Structure formats: structure tokens, C-alpha cells
Amino acid sequence: MTKIVFMGTPDFSVPVLKQIIDDGYEVIGVVTQPDRPVGRKKVLTPPPVKVEAEKQGIPVYQPEKIRQPDELEKVLALKPDLVVTAAFGQILPKELLDAPKYGCINVHASLLPELRGGAPIHYSILQGKEKTGITIMYMAEKLDAGDILTQVEVPITETDTVGTLHDKLSEAGSKLLSETLPKLLNGELNPIKQNEEEATFAYNIKREQEQIDWSKTGEEIYNHIRGLNPWPVSYTTFDGKVVKIWNSKKVKHAKSEEPGTIIRLEEDGIIVASGNDTAVKITELQPSGKKKMPAEQFLRGSGSHLTAGGRLGDIE
Image (tube, rainbow, N blue to C red; front, side, top):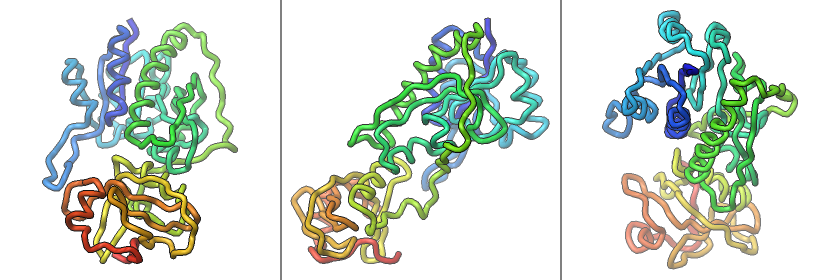
């Protein structure tokens, strides 16, 4: 039986791990990131992959850095036939890449060479793409640059968020891996080198990227909001306070107001001017220190002082 070491960390990785187990492979170890403090109370929380591995009775390793000699040796000592990674979060050293009989492969949530990096799902929506997909490829010492084994396309709908697309891609990745592993182990695949000239990158989202730039087009702002939902969530400011924006709609509007101006208040939303003739209707938001709520509820409560002509996006 093929002995596999699985490496992954977030929710995206869990269905992939479960699929490997369901397909009858022997997972001899799971490598994931260390437990991290989560939330305002900084509660030390295990990564989702660790939780699943412990349910399955699989030994778990949590190196801060897999490249550290003592941590690397623990994994090498397992003598896996194959290493499978999915959103692990660290680049593997050459010594580990070369060790398994069948190599090290990665399940990546984009159609490589597009969107290499840690946030491909976010960027596929932020950039307004109509499709993305899953790539299974050999790992290399360079970020997501290994030879491609298999790919599958996944369409992006107009209403997809990072959350919905994440679930679609996780499922697609599990299915594609299930189809790929037998072919890989039987030597039936012909790896394809990536075209470096076509490579684009999707680095992890930074705090400054979360703020809405109202001078952009309505389409770009709409994609920005759904491209950060449900994490890390876009925001704007009003009266110097941060307001998270969870959901919105696009509304045609003859442009006259300055970007960020509240055009009008409707029962179910706040219509805001953008940089073109597509306004943005905020339908779900979260005032600072409160839970997210429909715009209708907000306008009846803490947002009752909002008026047409007010401006969003002022300086914090």
C-alpha cells in the first residue's frame, strides 16, 4: 500500500485529506502549522487539518519551520512513498522534495501558472475572473512553480464569494486528486512545465488591501466586497469609524456625485457612488464593535443618522 504524508492547514485541506483516506491510501502522518491564537481572546486553536487527523488517529507534526533540521528529520524518518500538500503554507526543502519515491505533489486552487501564492481564491474574484480551477502539480523549491500533472476548471458565478468558491474548489480538488493519484502511481501522467512568462501572483491579503477605494468602478468595488467575504472582509469608514462591508449589489446610476457619496437610502440598502456609472448598494454590513446585520436593520438603528450626500471612506 502506498504510504502518504499529507501536509495542509486550513479548512480547504480537510476534504482533500479525507478523500485520500476514503480512497484507501495509508496516511502515515499529517504535517500542519502550529496551533495559533484566534479571536479577541487569543484562544490557542488547532488548525482544521490537525482536528481531522486526530479524529482519524493519524500522527500529527506541527513544525514552525519544516526546514529546521530536527523537524525535517521527523518527516523524512516516516519514509513516505508520496507527499501530498494542500494549502500547507510553507515551501518544502529540496531534501524532502527528493525523498519520496513518487515525489511531492500539491493541490493548488488556481489554473497555474495564474495566481501562484497563498490567496488564489481571493484574487480570482478580486480580478473579476469568470473561471478558475484546481491544479495538481509537482512541488518545487520555487513558489507554486512545479510541473503540472492535471487541471480542472471551475466557473465563477456573478454572486460567488470567497466562501462559496472556496467550498467549490475544495470539492473539485478532492475529486481531481482522487482521479490523479492512480494515474500518477501507475506512471500514466506526462508532467507539463509551466510557462513562466504567463505567471501571475496572489500573495496573502494585507490590511491596506481590505479598505474599499470608492474611486474605482462599481464593478471593481462589488468584486472587492465579495472577494474578501467571509475573510478578511472589506471595510470603509464613516465619521472616522470602521464599518465592515459584507455584501452588496450593483446598481446603474447616472454618475454625478463624488465617489463614496451616499446617493440615497433605500429600505434594504445604502446606495453609494463609485468611479463610474455603476453605483454600489450596501446590503449587509458590520459597524465597529457590533455583529454583522442587514442594511435594513442598521438603518433603523445605529445608522439612522445617515443621510443622502454623506461620504464614506473618510480618513480613519
